[in-house]
Length: 170
Image 1 (tube, rainbow, N blue to C red):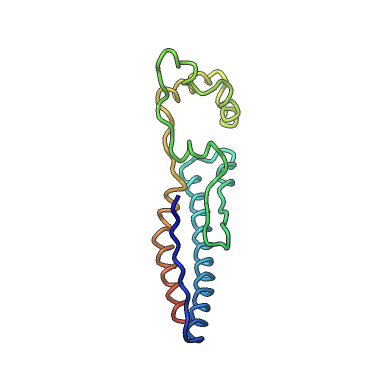
Image 2: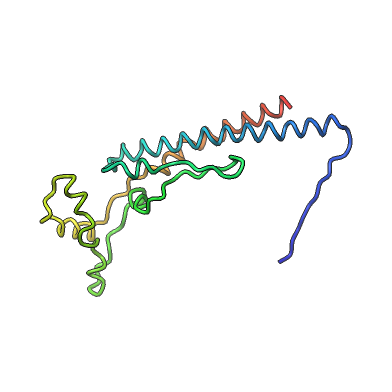
């Protein structure tokens, strides 16, 4: 694989170099603050969203939404490590109805029982609920993407302002 590298060396006035170093440090600090505050707003917005969507049963998914920060705090990942969260966010489509896949298209037996008990639904209704999920899927109840989209313009604006301040004060 070919590599391409570009090297820039700043020579000249010591004051210019010092000012650029100050700008860099202040810009990084400002960006870290903006990223952290936006990540927290997205996390809290996602938690509120999952609640407002009526997708809270035990609270486990809502409580699992968190932000993790990358090296130097210049990146953040907001999400959950629960595999079932994607089914809440995106929903599921109806399951295949081919005869050869009939047993695989239903949710597994027993998987809904704890949920049914918590909601006072008799165990005898399990097959009917599984069949309904097979035929109709489950609705999407997005919570993470809307929280991100709500925060995006504020993040970009805040980052622009913070970097601008860094330039002026360097």
